Amino acid sequence: MVKITWPRIMSHGINMSRKQGRTDAQQKVSTCCTEVSRAELTDPIISFRMQKQSPPCVKAVIFQTERGEFCIDWTQPWVQKKVKQFLTQRNKHPSSTP
Image (cartoon, rainbow, N blue to C red):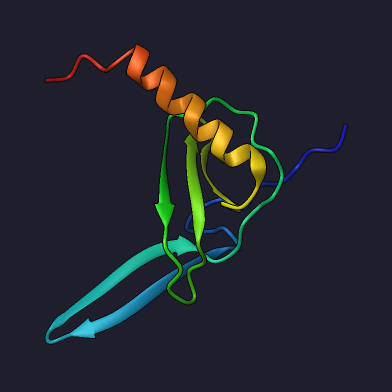
């Protein structure tokens, strides 16, 4: 079996970018996806978020799983289905936090 290596958001990942900009005496550092995977993610989703395109960052859906965060191509047909499944599950079993 061939193991797929997912683009991950980690400080040592190849698709990471630290976007730096200075405002007055402050320095802002953020991490983003600079490339995406098209391979279908089969891990259970813990959460997700959208990332807007702002070079060097690319437009992506970032799925969080127990293995970490994955940068996924938002145009893939399976992505919308995965998001809907996650939202349906979350609405059926809301968290107990106040």
